[in-house]
Image (tube, rainbow, N blue to C red; front, side, top):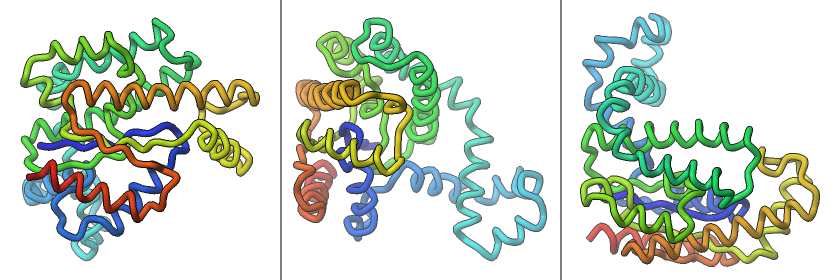
Length: 270
């Protein structure tokens, strides 16, 4: 399995770029999202999952809806797959990612980045969720394909920013490195000034993240500085580990960036 991650600070435009990329940039279907990969796995086990759990899980009325609506069936089977195999994934795969949690918690204890305790607890729960569903699950089933992550385990790990995290990742066994280190990084770069303006505009419209809640202007500027610096360090660290890094200028037109992304993915897939 090849993993390619987008990384970028909040309000860089990463999510907008990814959504447009899904609409325009995957005509050949040579890569998928983690959600699509889970659905592929679930559909291969369709009859077993239906026999073991569809009717008890969703009831008879929804079962007949599944038979008429392929999209509803796919999402239902995906959830059944998660329910059935989560314990097995936890027992067999999650230990391989122990160092990621260590780096995450180290960043909190050493104040590598400033986050309020209640935000950190929420963030750890979220990180566990994406690690299990989007990465460990696919490893458990030996998924063979290229996955593109808009919200991945490298992007979301605030501990992967310095020399000590580089040393820890470098010392991993080849097998664990293959599971953790991506095949490529797409670095969505944005200037500090533009990032501040975008966040201010987003907050003025009422779209406030938990990290921005109750911040004054000086605190918001500091948060933007930390975000831009840390994502830059993360991109450099991945490059130093030998990971191909595509740096995008997020001030440019998304169509230009998508063209670069497709070429980058195709090069990695060779």
